Structure formats: C-alpha cells, structure tokens
Image 1 (cartoon, helix red, strand yellow):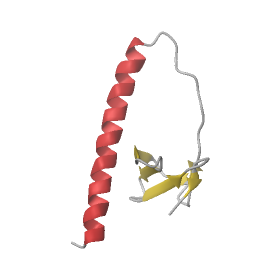
Image 2 (spheres, rainbow, N blue to C red):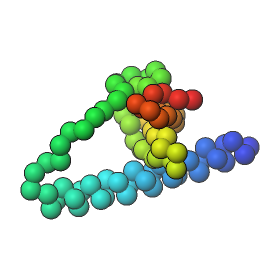
Image 3 (cartoon, rainbow, N blue to C red):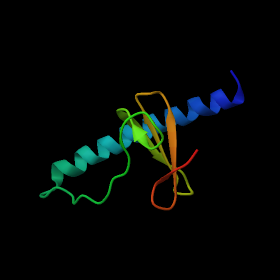
Image 4 (cartoon, rainbow, N blue to C red):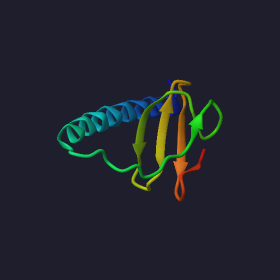
Length: 88
C-alpha cells in the first residue's frame, strides 16, 4: 500500500470517527433542547460533481478550517476557506 493510500485510509477513518461523534453529540443536544437550533447555512447540492454530494457520509475539519466531506461515491472532497469554495 502506497503512502498516499495509507494517508487516504487514515483520513477516511478520522472522518468516520468525527461523524459518529458529531451525530452522538447532536442527538444528546437535541434531546435536551426545547427548540430546534436555527438554520445557519448550507453548501453543495445532490450530485456527483465537484461541490456536490451523493449521500454525504462523513465530515471533518482540519486546523486550517478546511472541511473534508466523504460521500457515497467513495471520495473525499475538500472545501477551503472562505465561503466553502471547493478545493482539491
């Protein structure tokens, strides 16, 4: 397995772990919330192109604020600052 493939596997595992923790925390938070949290923003749409998602499955944020999203197409997309523009 190449170094790139090993790093990709590590990123996928981190994203899955982050997504699991986020869902668990959100579930607990919503259980105690009296009102639903306000909608803030969204980006992307249904699809398989750059900036589109086919069943988003995981999300992570790095130290620089870049957002990584995995989806049902077995890919990782990177969104950079500012404004959630599509990276890599």
